[in-house]
Image 1 (cartoon, rainbow, N blue to C red):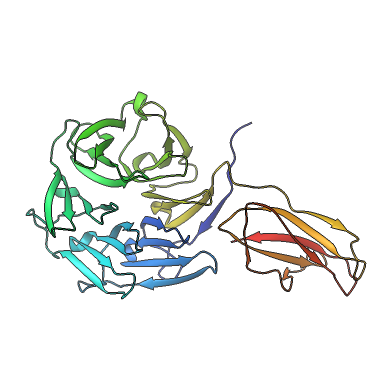
Image 2: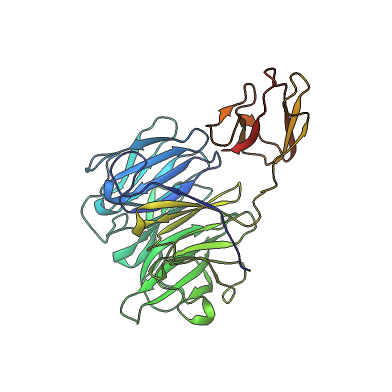
Length: 368
């Protein structure tokens, strides 16, 4: 008895493309492209999940498009990418059309409006206003895009409705509420996740270090799935927790037998969760329980040339599929000509192999 998950591991410690040194934030856009803040390699890595190709943006430095320990990531509806360039005490925005980087803040720490000290995360609303977790200034700052001005959105304080060391920001799917994860090292490691309206009004504490509110310890990056369930990297507990009922509905999704100091989560609309497993210098891509896992089936006369053998499977929109074959499971798989990069649809999918050679074949369907 128990709950079982399938997962893939991407990368390990290293500097080559597809390897990581403290990956601290992940983001998946609506095209299923994966973005990784590869923090101590001072770069952003991007994975096209349809082709499994990695590209790299940036290197260590202080120029626009260069980084010093990037942490938080966010994206607006126009696919502009926002990066919290923590070691440079600034935020950078990459224009999706031109590829030009715009810098907010300076390389030295400061506590004025639009200045930062060790910023850790960012959230962007539908009007492209930016909200920055300004960690060592003990505040959340807001950039109002229409006015081009910075202001303090949440001030310093231990009581609910204020923040101490904010490390994670997330808007809910409707961008009507901002969730803020923070902790206080001087108060017995107290941690919490708070919920604020878009106008800055505190509405609820949705989790905390109390055992009846999730038993959290320095929660960090968060995400929602399609069912409005919240996932959070509970960093110092080396686990990812999840809840749909607050504040008492928290449970552990995956724990410290697999993870080491995870710092962020990102949801793929095809029902997968990506986890920045920072202490293990890798990513985990975890299938959630309602992923379609129905088996591939076949019908026809196997091995009879021209008779035709039909392979069927249950597809899911948003995926690409390839049908592959092999004469024996000990030999490598080959793509079945004409049945590669098939656009997924919700429901039954199929293809027919005429197999003109008349040889026996094993079949499988891969999704990507």
